[in-house]
Image (cartoon, rainbow, N blue to C red):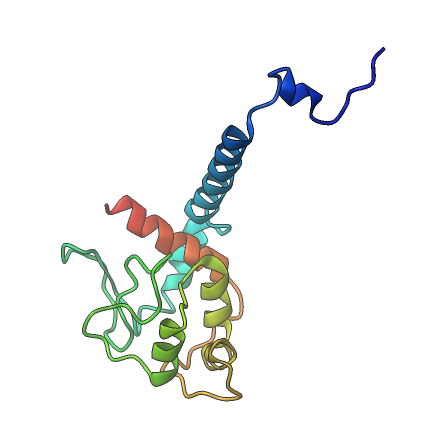
Length: 160
C-alpha cells in the first residue's frame, strides 16, 4: 500500500480545486445560516399562547394592513420582527437606548430577541455598553422566549 502525500489527491483530480472548495464551503455556511433562521428552536403553538401576554401592548398586523392578532398600540407591531433590525417600525416612538442599539446594528435574531424579552433594560444597557438605560418595555418574560420567537417567525412566514 502506498502512502498518500498531502495534496496528491487534488493533483489526481479526486478533490475539488481550491476555487470549487471555497464555493462549496461558502454554500454550506450560507445554507446552514438560512436553515437556523428559518427553523426557530421553539414551539410556535406554545408561542401563540405566550403571545396572549404580549397583546396588551403589541398587535400583529401584516404589511398589507391585515390584522392577524389584535392588540395594544403601546408597543410596536410585531409582524416580521424575526430577523428585523431593532427600532425599525415606521412611526413608532422608540426609547433612546433601543435607538442607539439599532444604530450599533442590533437585529432581532432568536438569541437577541430571547435575551431582550427576559430583561429589556438590562439587555439594552449591555448592548450599548452602559450600566443602566431606561427602556420603554417594562414587561419581562422569564421563559418561553424561544416559543414566542418561533410563533412570530411562523406568523410572518405564513402571511407572505
